[in-house]
Image (cartoon, rainbow, N blue to C red; front, side, top):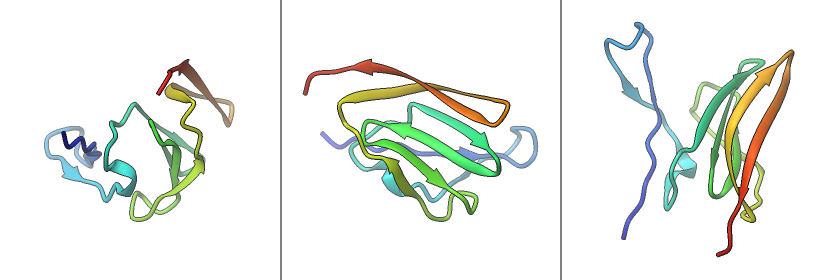
Length: 88
């Protein structure tokens, strides 16, 4: 089975959508997306990924696979993330 997550953006309120260059997508789903201080944050089963250039490049900032990371929230510049433990 091939699983790949896609990430899209819209610059016109959702009328048109464009695929983002989301590198950490192979074998994963996108669980959550957040924007904090101009950085895109995405979670999937490979951890938490960050892009500081609008999705052109990504780096894994939390490469844990012990949890499914989802439910991101940003409040007063702090990023919060809910988890669900999984057994692989």
